[in-house]
Image: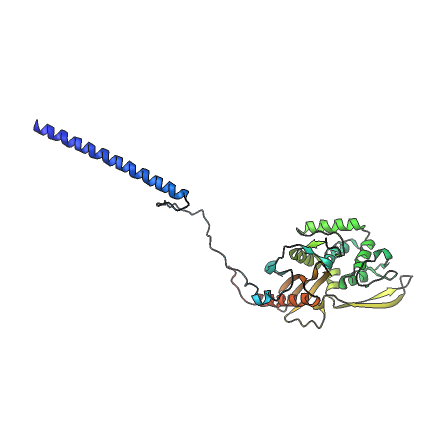
Length: 335
């Protein structure tokens, strides 16, 4: 009997201890869960994190810059509103500022005009007359009553940025003004020029706008046409004015290119200008877009929009080209 009582007492003690341990364990688990929930809600990491394999996640390592940044001393010397420097061989942007900001294009518009016109004109040797209705403001490069070949008119219009010349070419090509504008805007859309809006083919209107990136595309597309490249790569140009019969030469005229970087005295170090275009209206200030080739055969495109003065656009483009050539001549991390 004594042994039975001892056994029952021991059993009761074990049960009591088991119940208490279970209660304590449940309380601990409940408290831990509450702690984790509270910590997660407040934005802190939970006390216990179960790590699972993350093989599906790609490395988040940051790639180093391929090219160094434009030095501050050059940046601070630039007066332009926006610029862009492109390695034309790879289409990599080497440096830029506000390069997607639309600005009045001024005569850079003529790059796009020239492409549309060159694809429409068929008889380049035809002699045509400048008419009074072609006349637009700007320098009198060609004048009403003068007769010249279409090829000469096309070249001098681009070289000296003649507004009257553009309007004469629009007429000679058989376009109405509305049709010409429609063609230009359609081409801009096809090329992906997202900021470009053309409201006149000369660039005189401040509502004709585009960005430095769009201009870089315009320039490269334009230079694919032999008639355009041949014109804008010349430092000067001379052409014949014909008499009423359109056959007899009366005199010759000549002009120099508005792009001073293509002149023989431009003092370019390490590169030559393959072609380019200038632009100016008061609303935009001074523009320049050029393609250059280095002595090492690197091709570069530089666009400068809104420089403070006539000379500043050329000096700033040279500075950017010299920096870019130095960068391309130096090995860089390409990982």
